[in-house]
Image (cartoon, rainbow, N blue to C red; front, top):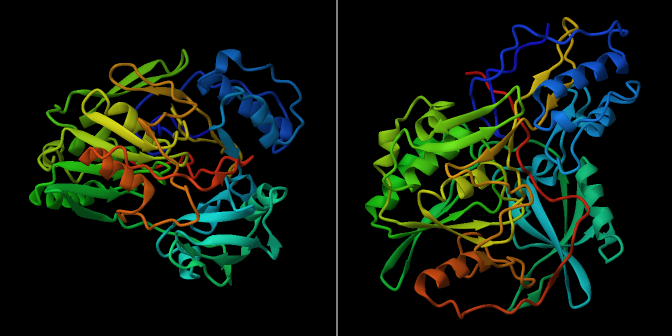
Length: 452
């Protein structure tokens, strides 16, 4: 018998909610050879027919002899880029990214006829950070190959697939130009929970809080309370929330932040609406229910008490802003004025839970992560699968010089500060041309399972 996954639903980030009953009505399994592709793929098909958000338009079973990863992909809606399947014994089946492997993000651009890879983000205590990589550095060579228009995308894909990188790095400032090149080698490894940098910026007698959140980790509610208690005690009247590299995380932590930000809400106010297939139906969650899905150490009232004197939130975003971060943008709109600055977000408006094949005793089988619910706010606003467009569009890579996050000269933060002060005429002329990538550069959270 398969384990019942239905006590959990995670919107491609953590969330606990009771749904389907799996104590009965299990589909019958034909007598395929145990462990064969047919054995696995028939199970995959039956689970998808039961749980998948678009089960009504799934194709027929077709050829069950193909590789399970390929078979699963063939069942998905064309626009579904979120659902995936992996096998614990096959690391290559798991989602891959530079951030997961090495702890950094990169974007490519053209400047003065040359191609560079701009280091956008480096995680603390990551393989990248520990080997000297910093935001603002520029990649000129990857494994000894000079970047150009014809090869940058292929080299980017090669980096994602590699276990070790050799990068030639330079840096640029308007005052001194390009620095001498140096070589950095990085071996893939683990990166753990990240700090949450924050500061207060004073501009023309206005106190502005700046908070940069890399990820929504389990149990962050108390940390959020402490940070915002300090910001409130310093009498901030404006807030800039940097979510441009936040790919999601724990829904209870994201909800805790939302409770702090939204003024005059009640614990029973509707926060999230889930819409599934005929089996899943519709499920609504209040702020309190969403908080309590994975948070027991702090109350709704304690979080609400540190709400600073703000009536709007400026959120810095981009194509790496996904999942729980997008939920905050969309689901806080009914309760507070949200002004987004940057580029269009990734577009992950679905929820799901992991489904494990444990039919063979003592053996870990395939794990499915299908999209099961579409997400909406209390006004039934959603449908952002193609991303949320920013209120103010600004590309953070407008030249070869990138400033540190939180620096007043950094493009997105500077745009927010100018908007707050009313100096909206101050815009910088871009001197670079951003280049597209065939692989979407995101670290949007995979669906993970938690134990209540």
